[in-house]
Length: 242
Image (cartoon, rainbow, N blue to C red; front, side):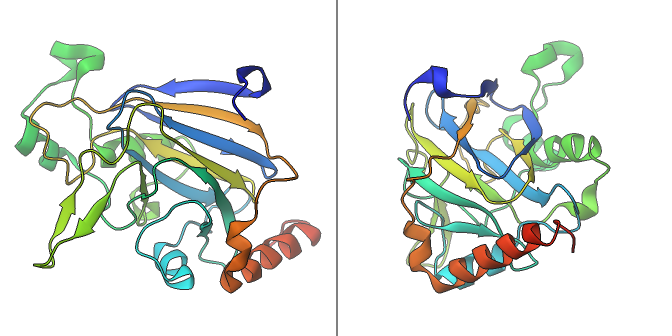
């Protein structure tokens, strides 16, 4: 899937900025690290019933993993599957470090307000998420543990989480093939553990295409993913009602 004319649409989220939109079941959203070093904090919500959202704990324990990559699925708190990771050139996506907030960004990078720098202002993950969630009638209480696509944080011998600044290179991408009609909320602000001296978050390119029928089914090798997909199919077979 490399021919641009096959994409339904494409859009670039500048570094530090935010985006949200509904991705329909049967389509695949490709996230691409445009220039290297991007971090895409993402949350998922059921478009029909937004009380159903991504569940980090169920996603990790059902697949016996600490991070996400190709062959994994993203589970909801209702035992269903939002999407499957069907292609991934990165290999590790952080699931446990959360998002930055205004105080953290200010302490690390200093102050850069809109009044002086306009679109060059320093944004943070929490405020970005709240702006996008507000467009859909959601707010702070709807923020749960998120995925940080393109970012890697591993545990060292001392039990400390260490950020890997070189985890993602320019052009790296991850494909999310959706099984549910999903509200996707994304922030491209710096990862909370990023120790870069300068505020230079990377841009994230979004592209949507119809999921191929022949797409490899690595995630079906995991029993909990099979059950989650069956639950998702029943949900839509019964009219998409809880």
